[in-house]
Image (cartoon, rainbow, N blue to C red; front, top):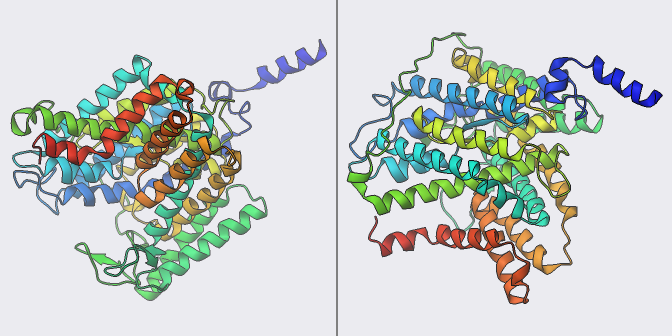
Length: 496
């Protein structure tokens, strides 16, 4: 009886904010959530700067550029990118109570630009209309329970492999974005150290120092190590730029200074606040693509978008849940269906805003690594994105070399889960291995998941255990076969 009274007293002393987000219940605090939300924003704020570059400089099938003239449309795309990311990330925190942030999907935006909008006679509005349709279809799959059922049908070992594979994936992303690893211009090897097989320049030194700072602070159990390192690295970067006049690595898409900054040049901005231009919102045509490229092509393009969105999010939320020790005994994160609903709406919202499909970001793992465990962190991240619509100059201050060390370190944290896979059981070990290695090597989360699913089903069939495979896994494996064979299928139907 006294114990019950004590629990009641403790519960009654919690604030409404604590009770709603279950902050104490998940072993966190408001300070940790705010810190984690800020770290997540710092590691993915680059999308506000990068998205205008990726989709703003590619002409559509009519020769027009998204949002107006090339070179003048950047601020408009950046504002819409930050706005949708902010709104959808706040919704993720408020509705799903999960520390997951959303923004325009890298890879998906490039595919929309070069694989859809650039098709003959297609306009950017037509391309964004397909993104809206894809998001609406996924939303229907969630509301009917199909998407959640698929997620729950995946064996726990494969979910663990997905998390580990994403850890390696974001490690590679961090190393490449920092310039620590690059693709050589020619030669037999696919990657190299630095820009020419060696490390050179102050930005690389900043990356190394920031990473070492994270490692040392983490080893000394200093809370907020990731945030402190990013902020400290930004300050050091500003000093480096002021003294060395380093400048950017690339100009007009060409490397002009191998020892320069990868994306953002860290310097005190001359303008701190700028009014956003939201003129890109509503720039989509839902069915305008059908008479231009045909129904079959439309279906194939939507299928490609949908499958990538569908499983990228599944892998991401498992990885985030595992990193924060929030998965249940079956490897499922809390509020799975709510997470998927918000993510589906985000896909359609990104298309409706003219900035491509919005999806869950694995960079959220950096915030979880900094202590985030609830949706309050997502709300903090979302608010910072909304502020970024006005404070775009400040977003461009953080250099990649100061933010990406957090991704590399979180990759290490996620890699530790590999011990949860039974490597003596070939039926799960081989699919898990393929899932883990194909993600970074193919630079695609969906490709890794697809390879693992297909081989898992094949091995079960080969060993006479077909009945042990969930029916939905048979369906998904078949869909992934179509996904991998999409180009031959296009050729079969005469689709360019």
